[in-house]
Length: 183
Image 1 (tube, rainbow, N blue to C red):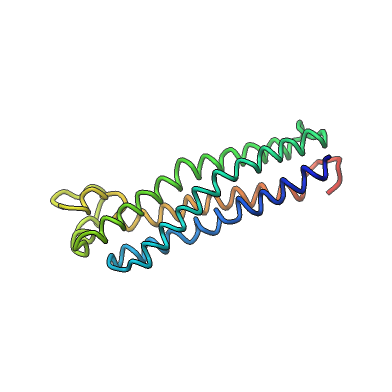
Image 2: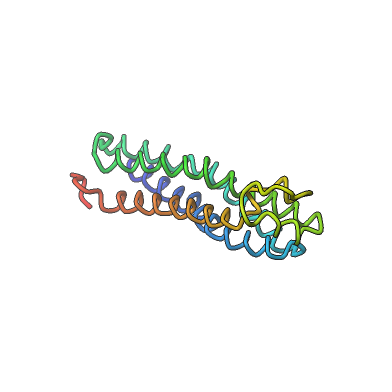
């Protein structure tokens, strides 16, 4: 049963977490392109697709820790330090994704859609100096934070943190420092 759970756990990690890490990494440069050319429908469609991939596969990603827990129980390693550390890092990665990455993607997507719906070239440019610049009107005023070019940089940073956390969990799963099950 251990091998069965392990296979499902690894497959779930590949199928669920892999697409999120790739799509989330592609989102910030895509958002910069879409904000630079508000009339580019293809860029906006790409962002919608990348955000949908992140949302859907984040939901499917719950299978990874569930199957990992089942695997750890069947292996009898629930109290091992490497596993506790990887569970904590998995929780932090999920929190980063849910609290920092996905909401910022939504903000940027709204900004792109708002800019595409108006003659937003000048309006978006008006908000790029600081968050909440006064004197802006229209769609750009409602997207203040998202229209700021630093928003894509922050999103890229949070995405990088998410990806780094998952890479660390993967390394812990392979190396298993201190494990008696053999690595």
